[in-house]
Structure formats: C-alpha cells, structure tokens
Image 1 (cartoon, rainbow, N blue to C red):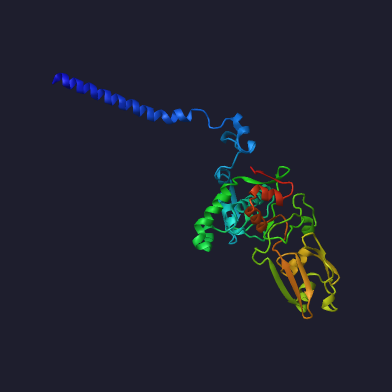
Image 2: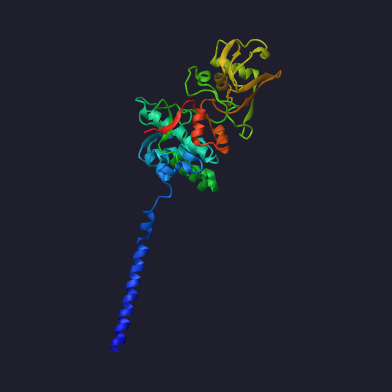
Length: 350
C-alpha cells in the first residue's frame, strides 16, 4: 500500500505540474502573438491595394480624439433669455448643429456644419472686442448662431431623438477641434440653407470681396422643402415699404414701370435692380419685401406684384442642402468645406 500510494502521489504531482505548464503557456500566448511580426510593416505600403492610400495603422493620418480638444475648451453662451452659460465646446456645438441643420442630414454634412460652427465660434473668441462683452457668442441666429438645449431638441425629434442625438454626437466628436483656415487663420465660415444652382460671391451681397467666399456650383434642387416660393404684394404695400426705406424713390407712375430690368449673376440671383429710380441690390430687395432669397423674378399682373423666389438665405458660403447633396454623392466633410470655401483648408483651430 505504501508503494502504491507513492506511485499515486507521483502521478498526481506529474498531473499538477503538467497543468501548471499548460496554464503558463495559455497566459503568455497573447503576449507572444502581440510581440510577433506586425501585420503590415512600413515597407509593405507599396504592396497594399491602393498603395499610399491604404496606410498601416502606425502611419495613418492623425484623426481627432473623441471630443478631447472640444471638451477642454470653454464657451460662454448668452442665451435668448439673457443668461450666460459656460459650456464645453463639445456641448455648445451639439446645440448649434441641432439648431442650424436638420439632424436627418448625412453625417458628413453634419460634420461640415460642426466645423463651420466651431470656426465661427473661435473667430469670435479670438477677437479682442466681441459682439457681447459678457459672453463669447449668443444663441440668436440673426446675430451669431442658433442654439438649442439637448432636452428641447430631443423633445422636438420625438421617437427619432436617440438616433439623431447620437448622429450629432458623432459629427462633433469626429471633427474634434477642426475648423476652416485660410492662410492659417480661421475664416468667416458663413452658411445658409439652399442655393439656386450657385452660391453668391460675397462682393455681391456686402460690397467687399473675400478671397474664400466666391461663387461656386451647388448641387441641391427640387428635393429642398419650399425650394420655390412666391410672395404676392399689392401696389400700395410695395410703395409704403419702399418709401419708408428709400424716400428718394419715385413711385408716382404706373406700377408696371416701378421695377427696372435686373442685373443677374451666373446662378440667376439678382445683383441689382432699379426700383422707382433707385438702384437696390438683390439683398436689399430681399430684405425689403421679406423674400427667402435674392434669386427672384418680379412681375406686375395689373393688380399686384408677384415675386417668384428660389432657394433660401443670403447665398454666401456653404449651402446646407448643397452640403447634404454632396454627402449623398460620397463627398467627405473636408471635400464639402474646401468646395464651398475657395482656397481654404481643414485643420486644427487650437
């Protein structure tokens, strides 16, 4: 019995030893695999499908971290209620993108919007004398940029709140700290809703040329809600509105002769048009009669003026619906931004 016990004991020791060895091998196996030959070395790039465009991970272009830079920068926001909120750039941009662009848009279009909004915000922050002494920026779109709180946006979206909120999260995080630069400086990243085939050169709207705000083709069209609209005004209303703003206009004769022949740009937008002997820009007429854009025609039918309007907004910079159309066709947010802002590039803002 003693010898048998010894044999059994020796057998058990061998089993235990084997088990310990096997455990050690399994424990160190991942380390051995990870420290083996890399899947793709630097000198393998040329042999990859697509050559330099198919980079190994250690040579991949730098991409933004998931909100690291934006979360580290503060924005002081003046709300419409007069309250000043201090938010991270990431929090603020979420509210701007949600307010300024339909969340149903393509993610690359939302990314382009995030970059434009971030650039505009940083431009204001960098100015020594901003629009609002107590804040960097306000939430009024007629002054700065629209902004909506997350809870309000999600309530508006209803059942789509989860999906849309996550899309905007990804758009902001996926462009972390990136903006639009011209000669290394943040630009005036103007944007608007929809164009009538082409954007408008800044000089046509404000009288001053801006190198990166040139007229370019814009691909949106009839898919845009209210792409074509009509405004109908009586002669007395046109006269009253015009004389209040431009007292020197002569509207004493037949209304059929009040408007002269318009000068138009390549996209059909009005550059200038005579009204009662006073020459107005298309933008001035748009503002005067509350038209959706300066791309319009006007006709007198014997009893009233009929304005037929195409597009929406001032027409300068990035068209939001145009950006969405480009994204649907496979354009990246960088493609979109460098198309609408001539000669600009996408880069880190800080």
